[in-house]
Image: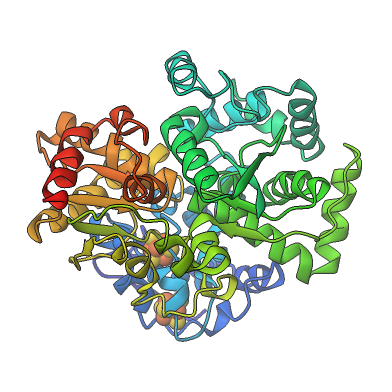
Length: 185
Length: 298
Ligand code: SF4
Ligand code: SF4
């Protein structure tokens, strides 16, 4: 890419982006991963204008797309703001290019997670999932409430069926997920 | 009429009063909710799908196979669980190659996804399967109250995977589902905005999640909403427990009772606030609801 791209107030962290930092094949890679038409993004900003996280935090959806098109891979994946999307789908419903923006964010987050950019809290709840089958497992207080309500003390889920929990664990280990989240202990 | 009742995490493990109330209401309507023995977390679309999409697909498919063995469609009170199970189900039905991959993983645990059941949000059961007239015929008393309805996100979006014919920019089916109880739904600023909890934001950046929640509560208060009625156990937690967290963090108090749809319907069908488990809400709900019921009976 010739010359430099100057960026104003928002957070492409380098105000000068050098050609050697760009990976113009990144958007293509994402298209191959199922994010169709990502290369057709025209930077109209409808996504950012629709985004509640954009209203309440520094997160800018259009900027994610801009960085994707430029191929600033590392910058996208290491940016903690990537985790501010609530997956509300406003942008995806409204994008005039019909880009599946949420699916794109999910793919980017998968890459970030795999390269060690997850938040500690997210790794922690993943451990709950691998150990109990629930991202939000039962506790004493709620077992008591369940008894008072006339429900079984533990719900009829992996909490009550050890064999079922083994199945979930087997799937986690099939995909190597247990190693990723338990290994970081 | 019977369904495989998918619990997820938040209802059974944090708000079991919603689970108990829904069982009572459905039972009274003659709808059987069957346990899905050994089901796990859906897994949550905002978190696990964000961490490892392939595992998310496989575990979601495993949950669906439990209902397939039972031979009944799935229903759930959680829009997040609905989002996961509906998307997994639709994707695996549509894409053979993906189904093959997922079934390869499932074969390690002796399961196979077949694509023989549907996934329905519990509001779909009321709206499409039972029908508004049938549900309305069970109403025994009026609830004259101004209610702020919270649609949430995944009940209505992504629209390609949803059955509602309303536009997601101005849906009205939730209004239709409460008006026959005498409830007056009030429009408010940012009515269709997210509660803030989704996408791993509640777990990862609770202060951002609460900013969403606080803004919604603020605009509900502006229009004088007496109740907040929701259709998702995770949104329910975010608004109910969220009000406690907002008070702790920001010193702001809203005191808007948070009612899940089946609880509201149960009240209209004649169940008491205690029978609907309102005493387990974090924000006081029993006395304001009793006052509304007394006023409505006059
Ligand atoms: S709305 Fe679509 S086309 Fe417009 S900037 Fe966002 S992703 Fe690009
Ligand atoms: S889905 Fe995420 S990026 Fe899109 S509008 Fe909602 S919060 Fe913003």
